Length: 71
Image (tube, rainbow, N blue to C red):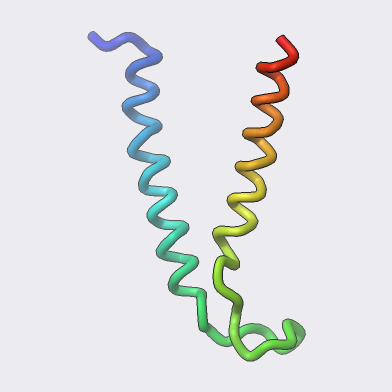
């Protein structure tokens, strides 16, 4: 029987990889599509999905590093 921590890591790893692949696919699919009229451009910009996700993950990572350095 696997320890609970190892089982969680082995389960969460592939799920996160699939989520990353899905976000990359969605970002590529949306790039170049026609945007809404209020957007001002004819098409959606590149990284419209990836950039907010990376900013969010970067903020979470910075908070985690600050917590580690504070300890």
